[in-house]
Length: 213
Image 1 (tube, rainbow, N blue to C red):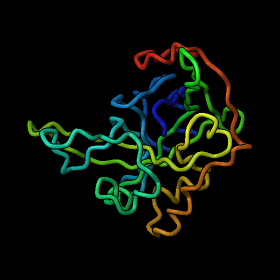
Image 2: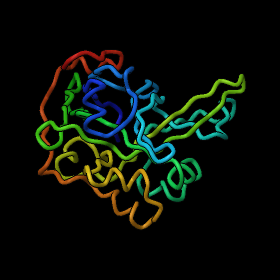
Image 3: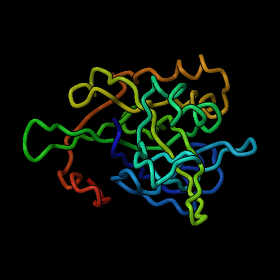
């Protein structure tokens, strides 16, 4: 699973690293949680853009009176077939920029959060899916979910699942590729030797806390 992550880059760095337009509204935040509104990168008319989306997927047919589920994670083995994800996997893939994400050691009390980073702390992207939804009152909302796969050897210390982390050269393919076989090949666990973990402040146990850890 991936239920908390950090993205702490300023807008100008986002534009340089990921080749996107926009993003002046982005602010560094250390503890992003489901239902929050966060930066997401997608292709629009052949151009990468960074846009705000709410974390927790709502397909266009989502009915709040009948369906409460708003998955913030999409299992890799279900994205091509499950109705909740299938259309977005075919037509509305995105990447979610991050600088770290968090897992918890729940063997004691309070649970101990661990910050996981990639390539010595370099920025990276999760594979994501996005949807556009309109409320019964006509309010438009764009939402996203993060694709998760089986945990690698490092992450399995705390969880059986981990987010799909894309290499820089995979980002273009995830955003623009239409071949299902090539897309599914990107859903393997990220190499554990390229990741590090460290214990951080238990202030992260409060999802409302977004400050430095």
